[in-house]
Image (cartoon, rainbow, N blue to C red):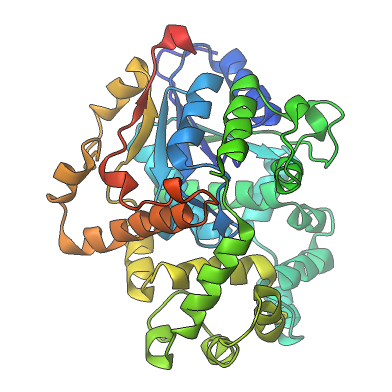
Length: 398
């Protein structure tokens, strides 16, 4: 495949970057040769609503080592929302960077089936399922099962759902962009690349172990040092920070924050005195609000995300490019971008309109909040975005 005019993109979290991710990047290199590879990477918190295992600059460096040319941060106003908004933000950002082909992992890489999934179920069947009190994801599966049973199982796998979201976003915002789904095999054992997953790696990290066989050497070395130095986020610290913030909430504050609906803010406020997050989740969880959605909502609350800012971002799309890491080839792509490039963060921040700065502040707060979760107080200082510079690397060093 010719790489003369191709720019390839991936939307990722690399939480952490493991051998499965390396295999995907190698497959991209095999298919597209020397075409530039751009990664839109989530920041200090991941889409499931928890701190990332490493800061965004470290994870971006892993991506360069694996073969990427440019890594930019997917803003929190997209990264900490549903799959639909996550996909739309990533697609619009990569499109602004000149990406021509978006590569994604999918448990079923059949593009025809994914397009059917993206088109949605029969509207009448969906309304019937919702009327039964099912959550939206469960209602979607029930509606497909009633009208297109071959598609319904695709909704049980997260990467298929994301791929369908990418297709909808491409159709709406970037019709010239091509989606290339690659087979994403998933398991929680370490028996070869097909058995590697981020969740399996994180489970071992929680036990104080770094699984060498699941990780490239550079990720293994960084995580081993992070574990030794007390840099990894501690769930206990995040829990205490969350419970403290919950107890400071007022109904007036909640009314303007996050993606609350259907009276959930009332349940949220009533449960604010919980002694543990497990107790809090038990009090607020409903059929319509599964755990991952509630976890994202909690991060939105912790960051003070105003509903109006989320709605504005969804309408206008990304308003800046924040480069985390690049090679010389990646830096060349940044020169052709029309959006503000925040490579000199403090200086460029001053040039942005106030409403854009309001959104940017959520990423700053996310970085500072994640730092507070470190076990070692030496790594808890705030303001990292004002002094951290993009990671750079020569192609020869990759």
